[in-house]
Image (cartoon, rainbow, N blue to C red; front, side):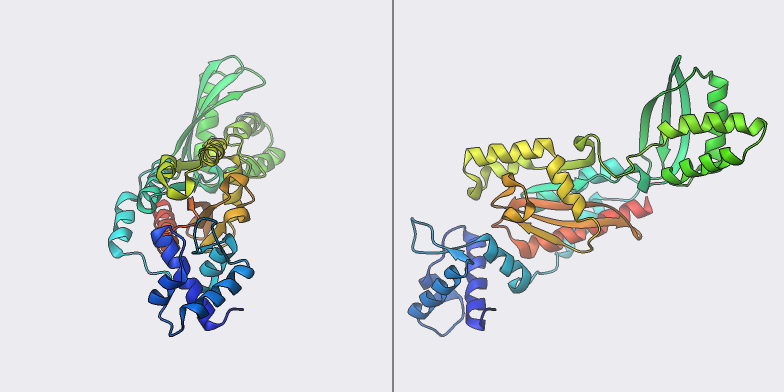
Length: 347
């Protein structure tokens, strides 16, 4: 618990440090904190805050800078986020229009977050199972191999090569596609597979042959990871603006930058961190070691889930140095999540 003077000094110090990037001294705080106290009193309070682990003193300066714990107190109880300017909300709506296709929207969202924050924009890709199946076609390739062309309700198109137990001719494949399109269009993938198996068990005579073919082809064509894991992390996350970090004052150490860019290239750890936040509504903020990822030490991740209606689809956010303008980034991330979810819901 901090008394009002300590809270005001901590708020002012962190705000000045975020703005200027330099350690903040007692003389600066005496001029800008709005407190009627002497510089000596301010120094005593700063010493208490440092002892509490909220501030640290760089060796080269008499001023102080916030620690990760200090940023956490600032974000949780001292920050006063301001609404995102309407012009920026309008920009989000203009560049994330409904009907653009999921991949295009996700790419645009990550680019926008990067451009607006000047850091890294990141968006997790929804699992296909979140979207209804619209249409399917099968094309024979060679004995034992079939190409499935799937169109989803969000206009995404996927091609999948299936390995089959026997050869199918074009007529059989057309019959199966017609059956699936007529009976299952508009339903999610997992629901279709369950329904097919149930119908096969209840089928008799001529329908059994068609259903058995449909089950074999649909099991692969409509498959998704049951546990939600992404086999290829590159397919599960869209990143933009990594090179913006090269010029950031707080990331001048080349070894740190190398480790950070390697983490961006692998994607898996960051994607797992994003997926942990999908069930929690609103903005979540990870500061430094709270991410659990060594390359993100000294960094912060601000995230928010995006949803179509009441269906959570994924998570988007901004990755940047802990010395970021949280009062601007937080409403930006929330607005982007709202606009992206609305575009996917209408699309």
